[in-house]
Image 1 (tube, rainbow, N blue to C red):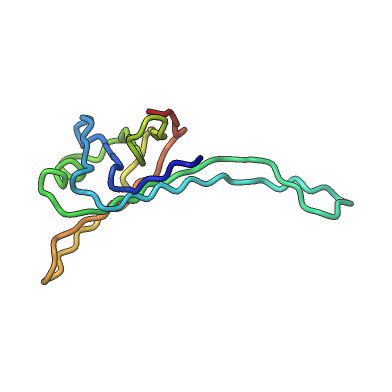
Image 2: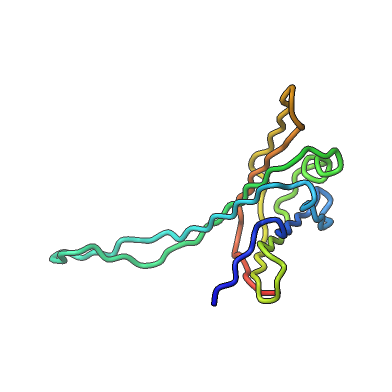
Length: 135
């Protein structure tokens, strides 16, 4: 029987610009983690259907949440490192997935609407292999 959960228990940590792991879950309200697999076509002459093989995998991370000066310092408070370690846990129940790896900050945006809370969003390109373990 499947076990479903909401995103409210998700956990996300990322290295700050100094290389220290920081759990920033308490300011986030959205985490998107799409992974894709490229394919290469290997269709030969005479075939009536296309054929493919698995090629390279890729992943990105998009986070957004409420602006916090401390988290802003973690993400933009120094020289951008070559890459940062991340850990993403969509849930906290025993057996839930834990994704980890290295990523590069590619976009950081602040928003200050006049009648609402200050927010931020950040995008990361994963570099290398994503490791999947479980709790």
